[in-house]
Length: 216
Image (cartoon, rainbow, N blue to C red):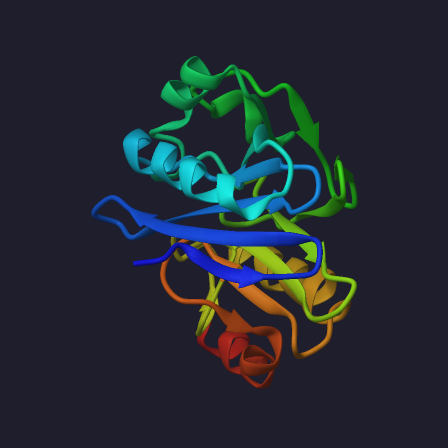
């Protein structure tokens, strides 16, 4: 199956699913520069290396993996991270409050609203507290179309991420998702979750009060 899911003006977005937990690994490549961001080196280093090889065709330049961003600390999102760092020497990024729990040191600590710059494209970090203390989403604003949110395990089709039935954590996550995503970005914004299929903010927005009422 072709990993290419979006061919936008300035970047391509590729996705593969790895592991028994259907973890999504995303790769963004600058079409002019070849600069690359990988989001969540979840598992299966060989599959990730094949993904990087496939994306070499997406740029008129020379592709170069410049950063691996981890959306949150959970083990299923970082199993290939040490091997990828060892194989490529790539720099790593994570939310400040989750970084100490990762299996490799984070070179870049990101907080809410921080910009992450690459040659030819930028993303914005959004801190979404609740699934883990330092969970982040990364948002790419396409100049010619909808924004793209890489939400980790904080937002899925049908609800927010798992908060282990803790009402305070659930309230925090729903508040952050509501205020920092739904109140900022329009309905056509594409949500790329850490597991499973994509959705849009418009598809999920009518259900926010249902989520609040059910408590998960």
